[in-house]
Each structure stands twice: as C-alpha cells, then as structure tokens.
Image (cartoon, rainbow over all chains, first blue to last red; front, side):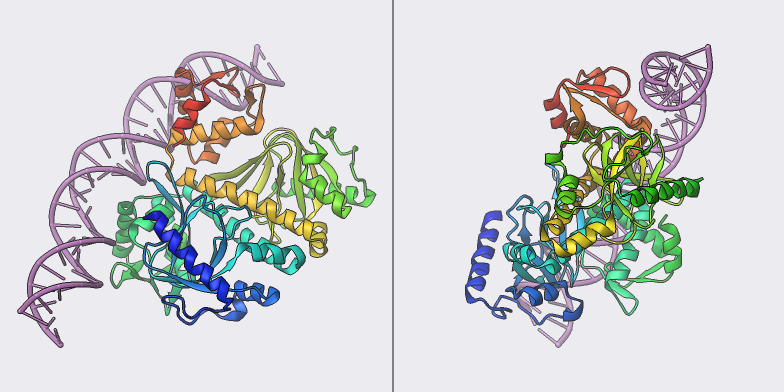
Length: 245
Length: 245
DNA sequence: GTCCCCTTACGGACATGTACGTAGGCGCGG
DNA sequence: CCGCGCCTACGTACATGTCCGTAAGGGGAC
C-alpha cells in the first residue's frame, strides 16, 4: 500500500518531466496558484535558473514522501496543508512543521528526506527536481544563497520549537501554537485549522486530550471563540501572548 | 555584569583584527590547535578565501555571545566545550546543542544570534568575521555551499532533537544522550563529560535529578560504569541502543 | 580541608491514558 | 431535496504514572 502510492507518484512525475511543461495543468486536481510570484521563493529560483516546475495533487492523508526516502524533489504548497514528521519504532510521532500555502518543504542538503511528509487535507503542490536546484546552485551564487536562506529559516523554526518542546507547559505550547497559526493563516481575524487535535498534539509534544482541555479552558476564559472545532477566532491576543512564557 | 563581559571581549577582538594575526598566540590562554586541518571546515573556508582567523579564550561559564546580539563572528571550538541555549523570561533554559572541539558554532544566516553561547569549561576558539564569510560566499560558490552544509547539519540535529524532546521518555533521552556523547567524545572507550547534570537536563528537557536517577539506574544495571560523576564508560552499547526507542 | 556537585528519598503536581458521551459531516436512501 | 444514520473527531471525567521539587546526605575535585 505504501509502495503502491509512491510508485504511482513517480510515474506521473516522470511524465511531467518528459513533457517539460512549466506548469502541468493536466495534473490531477491541478488548480491555479494563489501564491503571489513576487513573494514566491520558487518563482525567484525558477525564474533565475529557468528550471522546470511541475504541479501535483495529493489527497487527504496521502504520503508525499517517507522518512529516509531519496530526496528527488523540492516542493511548494499551492493550496492545502502538509505535515512533516518523524516516527519512533512504536508509533510515537513528532511533527516538526506544518506547511501552508506558499511554504517550501522537502528541501534537503543530503540525498534523503530526514522527515516524512503527508497531506493533511487535499493539497496541490508545485515541485522541481532537487538535482536541478543543486546544479543551478553550483554556478549561480544567488541560487546557492536562496537555498541557504530556506534551510536557515527551517533551522530557526526548529530552534524555537526545541524551546517549546523542552521547557514550555501545555498551556504555553497551545498559546504559542495559536499565535503561530493566527500569524500564518488568519483571514479576517479568523483561522481555519486544517489539522486535527492529534496532529496539533504531535506537533506540540502533547496528547490530543491535553490540547482539547487547553483549548476548552481558553474558550471558557473568553480568549478564543469557536465556529466548529477547527474554526477559531482569537479574542484576546495580548492575553495569549502573556501566556506564551 | 552581562555587558561588562561583552565589552571586554569586543575590545580584545578589535585588537586582534588590527594586528591581522592569522593565529594570535598572545590571546589569553591560547593553546596549539588539536584540530586536524584536513577535516576542518574553518581551514577549508579560510584556505579558499584567505580569511583572517583569530583565536580567543573563555573561562568556565563565561558568555561568548547573548541571544539576539549582533552576529559578528563565527566560531570554532579548538579545545573545551560550549553550550548554545535559549531562555524563557522566568529562567527556564533549553540547551539546543553542545559544541565540542572541531565544531563550528555561532553561524547565522540573519544578523543576530538566535541562541546564546557560553563556555562550559575553559575554552579556546578560533573565529572569523561573519561579514568576511558572507562576502566570500557572494563570489565563491564553494564557500556558499559550505555555509549551507553547516546550517543543514545544525538543522538535522535540531530535527532529531525535536523528536527526543517531544516524544521520548526520560530514560530514552538519557540513552540517546550517552550514545551521542560516546560517538562525539569517547577516547579509548571512555568519555569525559565537560557539562554538569543541570546542563544535561536542560539539553534533554529534564531536571538534573531525573538525569541523575536515570544514570544511577543504568549504573545499577551494569550498562555503564563511573570513574567520578563525569567519567563514564559504556559497558553495553547494544542495550543502550535498544533503550533509545 | 572545603566547597560544589551529585545522589537519593519522599511527597506532590501535571500531564497522560482510558473510557465514554457528544456533535458535526457525509453518504445514502427515500 | 430532505431526512436519517453512520462515522470520525472532539470534549470531558477519573485513575494512573511519570516526572518534578524540595530537602538532606555524601563524595570527589581543587
């Protein structure tokens, strides 16, 4: 099951490479990109180097790549959401990052992916071959710098997240999470979370029950409001910031 | 106190820059470098770009740079040990990494240090100006690639550490720590830890007491032996690996 | 010899895990 | 088009456990 999904992806992507389409609108579920080209690191890179970018779609909970799989492509979320995670042998999971529209993910320095990636909801991505990027970086300092920038951005997030996982209380973690998501995906003061409580827990190093309890407590204190479990309005960001250690 | 220490460092480093000494043996506590030039990322870079590398010394517990301070220099440990950490407002601390002889630290993509750094014991470092590295990277793709490599290495460690902090038990964390230190600083099957139990705890997201309890338990099980609290011999690495989730 | 660090014991707190009740979404059938 | 029922996800309560915090004693390093 695992391997079948991979195999299918590779075949389609091969076709896309053969057609050399800059944007393959024949890809299943392809949609127009809502990402502004000006603020788009992918566009900057492909523009500079004339790289071929394809598009692809993943259904909810579909694996994009596995841990320790060869890193053939670098991805950018067009629409939807992606989780990057590591697993322990008994199934315990740590989500290292959520990737939202505009985010680049799957960029590796080495030859394999250090984390696995799955679509949280139906997701469209743009992708380029890692080899192409590496080659371009070998001759163009601007590209090389861009790759460094993106890895450094991931490192910054990881450093902040280590502090959260190692030293923050459950309530502080949830407050941090809400402020991060508010910053990254709030529209008109409201955010529509794509991920379930378990994903949030595995991101924050908590159980889904602890996340649920913390959110309920914040709700009863009037710090946030719900419109369904995943539609959240922050009513008191200052209060939330003061909770975030 | 905090600012006085910084001021003194900056003044001495300024002198070193003025003298343009490649290796300033007049720096306090300077010692010959035990780092092999061939496997030395600093030597690779400075060799390529003809950068000026100075040396400097820090006493036990001395601050090397603070969180959010301008990142003027990039460092390499010659001898001793360094901890990089973040603090919460109430003093809770998360150590993100230990830097041992040969390790490069303090490399930032942005203009400020995202973590603070302190000498764990008396420590000698080699350092180069960040601006020089950036300039060299702007013209030399090899340098640019090297910088990316180092940041990517830090990211890999951070990703592994997020899994530890978010999902491993106390015993698993200590087992992971012991195997990491064994790999990085064991000589003749024995390791001499430079850091105290509190540092270990703040690295692993535990208290020093929990670390102590775990080590005692491993000792009573014959997995490790002590020659003083910080001299440890691993007697059963396989057993330890099986404990590391 | 002195001091700091480490160890160890005990009580307690926070988060967990289990269990169960509930609500909302979706498909199916009418 | 509407209503029903199933299913997944979410909320809540209680018992448990792991880890923490305090405190006191011991040992090694300088």
